[in-house]
Image (tube, rainbow, N blue to C red):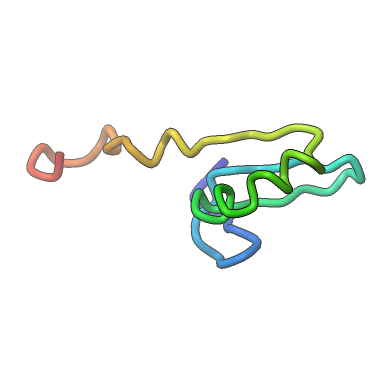
Length: 66
């Protein structure tokens, strides 16, 4: 996923992609992924979760920002 992928609920950066049995997909920020998690488990064929990236500092950040 890239920074251009946006949450379908609020437009924030998406960190979770849910593939549906119908062939469609939904994108969610971490907040909305947690909020709708139980329902998503019921309709998802596959889930691509990158929420682990939220706790990391980018490798190219200057030392004073780490």
